[in-house]
Image (spheres, rainbow, N blue to C red):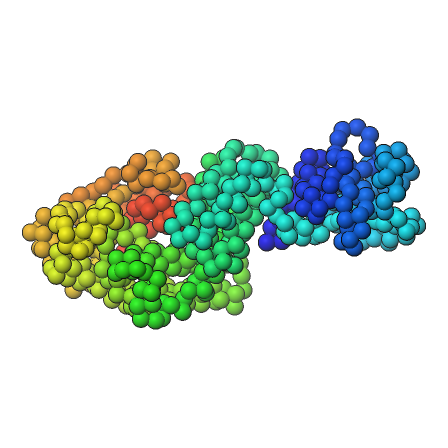
Amino acid sequence: MNFLINEYITLLKEDQELDSLIIDILVSKGITPISKPQKGRQYGVDIAGIGKDTDGIEKVFLITVKQGDITRSVWDSGQNAVRQSLNEILETYISTSLTSKQKKLPKKVIVATNGNLNQTVQITWAKYTEKYEKENLRFDFWGIDYISKMVSDNLLSERLFSFEMRTLLKKTLAFLELKDYDLNHYKNLVDLILDKSIKSKKQLLKQLKLLQICLNIVYKWSEENGYIKSAIYAADKTIIKSFQWLHKQGHFNKSYIQSEFYNIHLLRRKIGIAYYNKVNEHYFVEHSLQRYSRNQIEYSLTVWEEIGIVANIGLTEIKHYQFHYNSETPEQVKIYEKAALTLAEGLVSLINTNPPSHYPLYDDHIIDIEPAIRFLYLTGKKNACLKWLRTLIVGIHDAKILKDFFPLFNANYENLVNYYLGTKKQNEKSTMLLTLLMDWVAILNSEEAYDDLKKIKGLFDDKLNFQIWFPEPNTEKFYLEKEYSRKSGKVKHSISIYDSIKDYQKEITEELDLFSAEKDFNHLKIGYELIFSITSRYHRELPFPFFWRRLINFKTLEN
């Protein structure tokens, strides 16, 4: 956290930015400003204030604000040199600008900068302060590390944020512990930070640093209060919006932007790993998630949400592994690989120890199943994939026979309760979920599971409409926004279940060339295809078929 604040403060200009921040620091320390930065002659003092120092004694604080490191040339050269400013304070400001009462108070002269005191100047600084210090006059140096610490200690009151930003951040933190809080204040905060196009390198970096600071605050706050799940959704919003903002302005070709976006990715990954480490023990206990649910329906919905969360944490780890595959030592890369495998084992156990994972309630549980089964497949858990796949198909079949229940094509909690309890009769006619399962049956080449799917269709007298959504080229304009799969793309319907699985495998292979617009998206060329999975789960929109269908010709390690 301090590192991010440090990085941000180094980008502040001396005039109206760094000095404004220092004024807020004084106020937060109970020191009242008596003069503020202004144009024209100030006799060395940029900010003056009166208040109690750390020793409890009331003093006059006289601050000269500089930007960057204090080097030999900055110390001695020009009318804005540090020595010149200090001399003016001692020789002119104190005698001409302070009242009689203020002159009687002890004084502390401070050099404040968003840099450091260069080693070549440290002896000169020590000699200067030793020469002029006396009983009622002391000197101090506030460098970047000290200012960062003061900001960190009382961040919300600082001018890192505008009034509106501070208000939104405070409201976010106040509501974080509420289970159903939708983070709308944080979403508005992110939108506010990234509300306009920027070309300046310095300003771009400042906005991205500020974004990371906000996310880190939410993360630390949620971690301390035991609600890290909120930080996961905040991280998804942050990375989606920043990706969209940067790409729209054409900034991803800049190496420093790539580096800064990677830092956002790292923070999101850190939050995901922290969440997994906090809750993963529950994944290895039978019916562990039931204790957090008031009834069977809530238990089931909790399980599906958890599957989606862990799957995306896992895919993030795979992406991290890919980032470093050719740039890190084999030992370090092995750590990332082990982390991905550990997450996969946790996901498998979560599925096995919580039976609702066998019985989808909504058709849009495709959004949770797709990244989960793909993650397990990519980590070599093919046997676990097939086992879960068959369990899902059998579970859907049995729920239809025993309870006349079939996953709702349109998610609606009230209807779900009525259908699940049998107080209202279902009339489902369409499914995308079974199409996804059939695709994975083809990828895993399981004729037994394929036959089981035929049985489900038979329960509907072969009238159940299998469908799949494909994006189109114009989908790239919408896919980072809510309802992208409703605003764009096309749906293939009336999909056939052939007698032979080989025929369906052939159809998928042919459609990879015909209906895979997403593989040509400019966004994909950035090398962060993980964004497609993030936006699907965050917005609860349909996943992109290319990313699993391409695996029909993909070889991975056997389990």
